[in-house]
Length: 358
Image 1 (tube, one colour):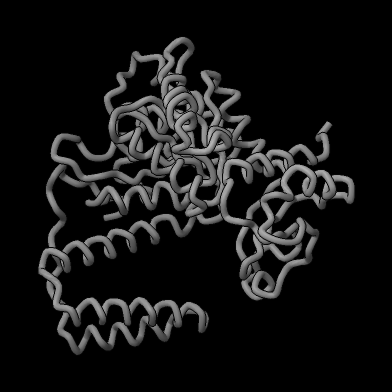
Image 2: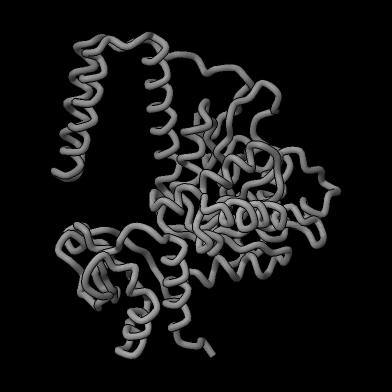
């Protein structure tokens, strides 16, 4: 339902069923039209998984959940597709924040600064902090992924009817899209939903299910909302060994809009991206590391290696086949896949190697 208004709490109409013979034909044509053999192989795995699910004869409710989830994921993928190259950041925060609240002005300001820097801003498309952020970014730089709830009014007026807006039934598919497409996150105060989104984001980053990204906890001077959350994490969870002390490096707490934006932009001043190739973690950068800098990385972060050391490498064969930024300089190591807070610190160190723009 990209770009269309949705009545709160009302499900979109179910399309008429396609005859089985036509469905087979459509599926075969769609598989054949995929651009590469790797695409077709993965798509075939999806079809096999669906076939296996049909074999166990699931309940009708389970089929409805699966069909709805796949449908809205496809709609969201299609909506995001034209903006794949644009850097995007998600802003979380309360739908209940009023326009005269200092938090509202703060959300609008931080989003405006990001849009000025060339970023697109993703929100849940509702009122409160979400509307404030979209007002700041402007419609052109805003993307909305809303949830259909019986007590909310659908998309806010900034994004309603825009092609960069999609409405979703399930929180889990919505959160997937809010996280998957973003290269940074700014969390403002909110209720259960905001805390749920924030802690899921931390969990994904802490466990390596999500790549390292800048995460900023932003509130107004003297409010202490995120200070209280940090005290809970550092003073209770870490003290009892429930998280690592290094996990507090995964986020920044601030009440300064400009520091929040700088935290996001600085994260990518030298660091570009990372991916696994076999058991190697490959880190791509804008500037190559010198011998001295490489020695420093091994001295500070060599304990993150399961074996061997951190080394300079050329683009590996799977990266070249995927045209995955083969021209960028990179380093690689066999990451032990724990200590993601320290991996974030390693990225900060890599960014400190960037040449001074002055």
